[in-house]
Length: 157
Image (cartoon, rainbow, N blue to C red; front, side):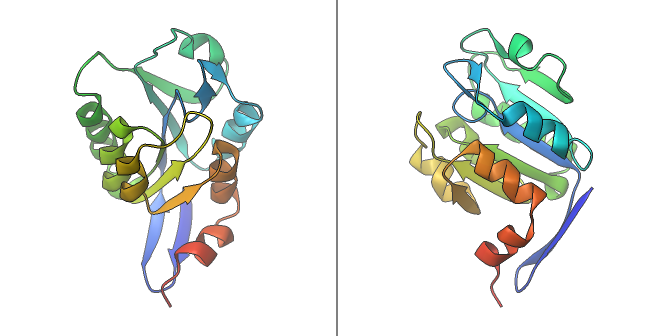
């Protein structure tokens, strides 16, 4: 469990981290540098869930041995499926990270939504649905390991 209190906003008791794969954790189906190590470090505090259409067919190979549950989605209504996953876990206990158009609903539903802007870009609906936007997945994962940085960006008091 990761507990974060943001002055003037909310207190979060986060149990789940829901992550998009392509464009967020991976580029062209390959896990980005440092992501595996960061996921291992966070697994002691959060249950990790990776959700993907697996466009490149590489998610199981790339995440083999890492402490996360992989959910491969069928084609169609992926935004609904991602949001439904967050809701099934208890949206108030979830932090979600994504970059795509189909991530906007899960970012909005989660207690804390983080949009990443990397080489693949970030869809404007995802950016607007997030609580915070960062320049990389490494930065996003680091925020969760150093929550005082989240407090500095999100405080309203």
